[in-house]
Length: 485
Image (cartoon, rainbow, N blue to C red; front, side):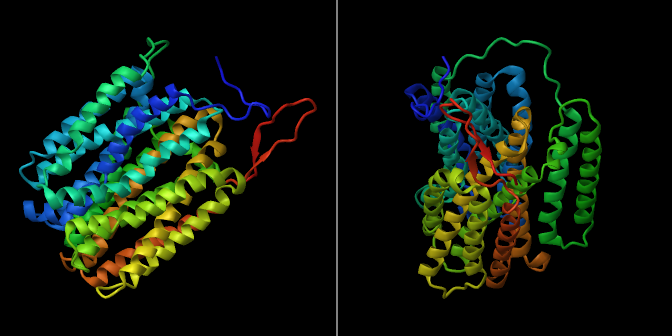
């Protein structure tokens, strides 16, 4: 029986069945997002353990994020082809296997390979979570449910370094990955019991855009590889030039393919004809790049510039998480009243202002000032994330929502990968030295400031506040209408 909302009955209730399903989904989703950054606080530890340079060991994080970006569109296709429950369980199982193998890595290269496997599982989890929960919630409850789902998406990456610091302070590096095992097993058992069975397949199988898979994902990988190698060898090296050339060539080939194919493309470039959608994607791309680059930078900064331990460095990120935790629900409550066009630029100003403090900081900078800057940055990220995701649903037609959501997730993860590669390059002085200095840390934080400026400008193109449509005589309630972008 469908649930409706009228002026008399109020909003549809979040019943116990939906909340149980939501809890099971969030357990898997939180685990995936937390693992994207849990190793950041241990980058120095892992580099010393495996005697690897920063340019190499950064791929422990970058490889994971790129694998997530590859798996997201494949998960969207597989969900339709094989069913949500089967693919959710497969994603959790691959994540579990990858986590276990990471703990037994014998060198940096094997750890990176196992992190890629782990990322393939994690990337399958996120879009399936969104699809299952959105379908169960229905249109009347999707707003509140999206607010709850945004917790693992936004807070997980922030909590990761804190958990990593606690583990490394008391246990060996292997526990950065072994900690996933009990949670993954619990998520699998609960999913078997709670998730509804997949319906039998009907109609013709959905074709996979295999050409898109083999063009787009390697293109991004080639570009990130070139940036990471520039940090160690300079922009004039052959491997950097080849990586850039291959990446750009693959992007160009994918553009031609996506605009000509009769199949549903991996990333539908036609969606970018909408100004609002382009602004939403740009914002999420840069939010991913800014957030993950800060989560890569800050632990290293606190350890190498201020001389803090691994645990202290992780705990010092708590204000960033606290600010995000405060900003998220506030943004959810204010989004319909003020619109993304107000909240996102406001959040961008806070992010840019907080990052600006770190560009001018050094060993003697007050921790109180740095804590306030992190709190402002986290609060700004909370104001940006949820309204931007909500604006996606206002800027594309209904039949394109699934593809648009996948595109936002893909580019958010790719932005994160590129952001980490860029700041690692800056930390190494563009290839002049392998060890970061106080000056290069200050330079690297300018990346977050620049990203915030672009997010501010893109936010001005997002949809405005939601206003009620003119009420027809006798109507009990009317549908909301978004102000034009």
